[in-house]
Image (cartoon, rainbow, N blue to C red; front, top):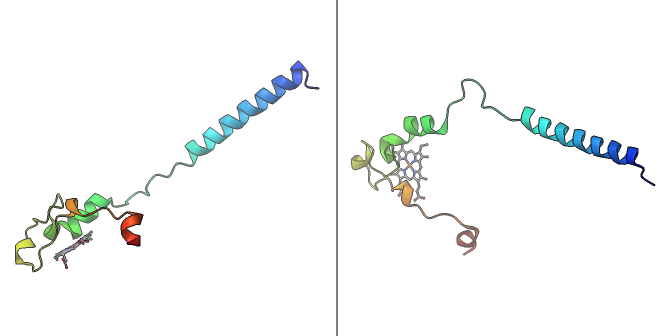
Length: 85
Ligand code: HEC
């Protein structure tokens, strides 16, 4: 039988377990390493010359290209249904 002491012990144990799990999530958060380059910067450096800074296919090099870079904001979303067709 669970007396009042055992109920309190169980509640304390559960409480400490919850704190430990939350602390684990908090301490386990991943920060990007110092010096990491964001996707925005990579896009601006390697893609925007053709695709434009907003991805609309109007970068400075776009008019010299055939075919033209597409408007990336209008690409269809690749759903599982679309892939299985
Ligand atoms: C030299 C110009 C140029 C650069 C730089 C460039 N692209 Fe493109 N991209 C194009 C052209 C032109 C097309 C269209 C090709 C076609 O229709 O056959 C294209 C097509 C694409 C598509 C395919 C769209 C579709 O129809 O499925 C994606 C996605 C894309 N580019 C992303 C990128 C990303 C991300 C980068 C940078 C890492 C990049 N491109 C850099 C010119 C460029």
